[in-house]
Image: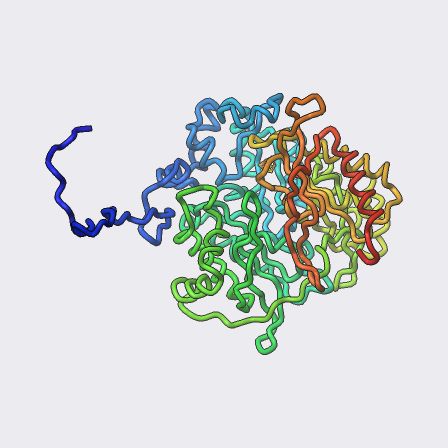
Length: 563
Ligand code: SF4
């Protein structure tokens, strides 16, 4: 650096001579958070650059016209690890790489030539034709894999890029899609698996879900958001509405009648926050516009500089609900919204397992695979069983379970037996009913710990060792392969966050940080809340069954009346 012997001229911001004060620095321009509405249009990180360079939706044409013909090696890395997600495609983790190497390897060293494909099923309901199509794709192109996710998607594995044009042709022929199933865009809209049939549902929101999907999914106006955007729309509190970016929950307004209460800013992962009520009442036909207004705020005002601060929850936390509502009304809707009452909430989450009466006199049957894992073969058998028992459709739940709808009462017992024969249990143990697991080390590139097989082993062990235990309302266990909380770590009675821990011989092994006492969907004096992460509460993965058994026995011994 050159040194000048000429004294610098004092500028307007310098302290007056003789005051003894230190010279003030020139005022710095505040560092932006990358909000478009405040003029920060230049990409501030590689993800933003990828989206700006080319709208990710455009990658579909390249897959169909180039990559499917030239193969995996021909794929541009920015498409492969970025834009492919907008069509539901992630590269799959290479087999045999342990969790200790996740953080040290480059993406190309971690990934396989195969893809995970997420099929979005907005609202969660499937006709038998759609179910059979997914089953057939699984058997033909995905080595018979299929997982029901906790967001009502079906996830397939071992997909080759060469097969994607034909897979899309088959899915789209029956009204299914993978558009924006992943990526920084509006993901699947969660809905009640019993929308339109439940006895206690008073207003079916399916038309609003359908309209949102028709208008906005795949619309380039909404395809470049700061990060993912999760939605839930249900009359019943049977989705995890508190942990979505936007939720509409059914409520009756004393003057205006049936409509929806609006919540914004929920999310889990590393800075979990519960969604907050805006205190407004939205009639059914206005739900799509209000939904688009909230997504517009997120697109324009959401933080894009740092990925870990880019979810809507950070904006809601900084603004508060009053400002959020004001911006929504003034800048996006051009009108005020009506104040609305709070909805009544159930005492515990509703999972619909078992046999239940529909409002038309028929039944629905909710059944549990183990930790959401099924197969194409099983889904085909499910379609056959449903058809043989007079049903024309099934639905998926956000708890990795499934329902057969519209079952004549006289055929219900026979259906329960048929489901049991194909590995789907309508009267499961508390362990099977309440345990979920994310994708984990088997396929996920971010994973540190194996989850699905561990979950299956855990359920089997607990069923054997604690068969007669009276757990009352149940005991939820959510197993996650890393801190990302895809299986909602913080909302379970026992939430397990995958990480490396010190094993008995002093070496690092797969294990879990334990969160205790989380819950959602609570009312009647209890409140929704996140499980507490207690320092030192960890277990190795190998000891997990014994650990949960010990914890459960201690809880059963020490619980008080009514707990
Ligand atoms: Fe993968 Fe982690 Fe999500 Fe599990 S929680 S699916 S390991 S990113």
